[in-house]
Image 1: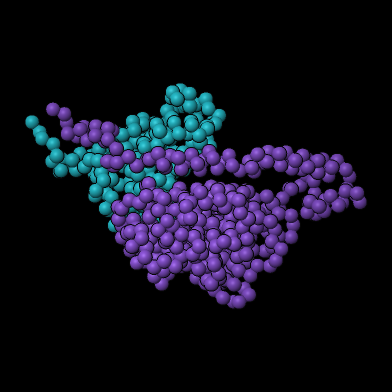
Image 2 (image 1 turned 180 degrees about the vertical axis):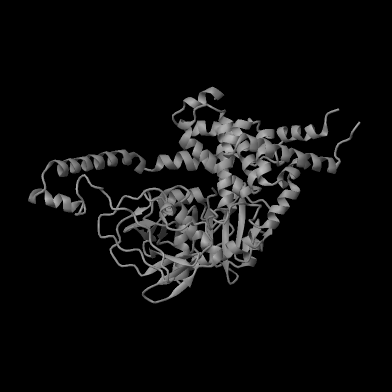
Length: 181
Length: 377
């Protein structure tokens, strides 16, 4: 479906939900993973996000893009999960096949599966810098949109962006992965 | 030459954090199942508007009658029916009071409501006099036996997540007809709060009304209060397996199995779900499903099958896989017939179908105690 039509929906059926997930599912998952650093939480959060989108599509007014709307929901859901991290929505049956909940399992993931070194650096950033960097640098939300999503001032967004970039630049130069002419 | 520092920004924009695609078609379909199809199945959604219309009509008629007719012998019964002591024009509901903590540290129990109960909405946690995110200890006090059972700190979250997510509209239970003797006791900042709990119905009482707790609470409470009951024994073993996994006391393998080898009596989870719809369970115990936000139940069947949340549990040796794996099989027999599990701890072996572990064997004393099929969500 074209971007402009999502805002006119009063509800969704299975096909529309699939279409939404085919377009944005991986991005939602990626953001949830970047913020929580956990496969299992990212799975749960992605499910919650699309469950919310399915129930609340009629409230989407098109003031932002549908992607921005979904990413805002993802960010807030992720933060809620992190805040209540000690309350785990785990059923008695563990279904994730290759990850446990232990720190060693998480460490193993961090070391083996990143597509690029840059992501290792990003994941080491403190959360408040990581989230603004990703929302701005990867998902290209505006400063205003980020401020609204994070419920902070635009000045704070800019300040965190600046610090995030500085850290990344320092690490990047320290790694020495680029040749200079 | 491009600036290396903008180069990393470009990579950030153009690449994903992980090499492999993690949002798979299976996960997508699971979400569709949960959102679209489970909502469509529920007949309650269709009945709700009709029930609401009737209730609203009756409420309006009652207010008009009480409001229009002068107080007297022919309207007094109406006032009594709405709780007596209410006068039209004054506040219709008594204020909701929280359970007060006591100075002495002795907990107070929630006073039974003698007036008509107010309609409570929202989540239970919103009405509690303490925050579920505070540091606390949780114990269970049995007035009848005088016993106190400490909930292990690592399991506090089970009860707290129930309090956090139980919805007071959808989890409302019928009024209890007996006294309760068990109390959930929460000690927060040296103050104690008690909430009555009934094991037989899996309900808590709040403001004179009963609400179902979730399945995690039901199982935990059986384990603590009735450890020799069927649910108590299952909960104990499942919890043990979960702890082994949390402590990373597991071995992993990437072996692949044909899905038909991991079926029970020729059926997978979905097949059993359909089959069990045709049977009448010998018992059902209600719980509020905090994931689907609907009422659900644990069902026990005569044949030795138990259904939990997204799980079918086989406790009888008549149920077996193609390779003859069944309740009573030894670890050696399982290894010989089926092979190494994808996830193995002392109490639980899990085998993967597709992306998820869906077939599980729970062991006690070296033998299979339960064969379990699960639906991942």
